[in-house]
Length: 223
Ligand SMILES: Cc1cc2nc3c(=O)[nH]c(=O)nc-3n(C[C@H](O)[C@H](O)[C@H](O)COP(=O)(O)O)c2cc1C
Image (cartoon, rainbow, N blue to C red; front, side, top):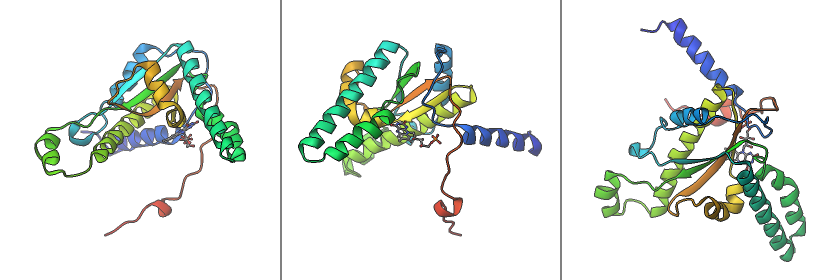
């Protein structure tokens, strides 16, 4: 059995990994090996999921031209939305969308890998035998259930990457703007939801930690 000193050390190391992970938006040219990608997906797949349904799939794009094409389709959609806003008399908002949200939504552009995180349909014996026959919840709730598990797997992936000296940035910007273009371009299954994309690579920036809400602001204990 582990001594308590060992478990305290494990905990300190774990907490350091959690605290030191940052969203990284600038990467070196160093490629990420398939072995590294497989290793972090190995950690992702041990995330918990509703009735162990494992409603996740990952598509790792390592082709620079394809990542560039995804960046371009995101900008194109962004400009389209800005033009639509302008046509409705919202030109200031349209300009801000391009200027402020544009770089944020395309911050994966110099990453050597872009991982598209999918949530697959929630399927389980519970759903077939009990939930659906009695109409327990509406269908959109099952879609959300898939997203929840996919998010947990994505967080495992990001912590594992950080622990291996890699860096990530989780991003929904390109998904909010260009999900359908992305789906068509990568031939993603029609029944999956595109949850987020994660930029992955070796960091070329080391931003400081961002402030968080205080524990007392976010925790209520009921004894
Ligand atoms: C659901 C979600 C969507 C995000 N979308 C983007 C994005 O589109 N672009 C981006 O640069 N960062 C994105 N981020 C990263 C956040 O900006 C970042 O996590 C937050 O500012 C806290 O910084 P940290 O991750 O470095 O601690 C997203 C994060 C989450 C959880």
